Length: 88
Image (cartoon, rainbow, N blue to C red; front, side, top):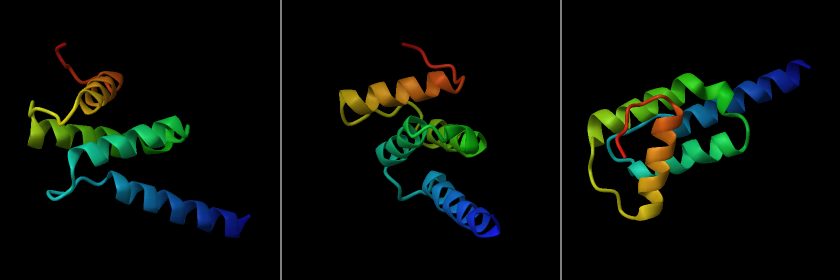
């Protein structure tokens, strides 16, 4: 049990590092990471980190034009799901 707990914590820290926004990180990569974590069904473990990453996207990138329709839709959906006020 202890061995599994240690491994679980190690994996959680690795996932958290994927959600830490950096200045050099592509916003679409961060959105894709968040979407993947949610689709895997483990997003509830990382609610705080996901909200912080989305807030960072809003603060730093604002309403910048996304590269394509998929990225625009993904950003819109994730921001709405996490309670951000996004106009359509």
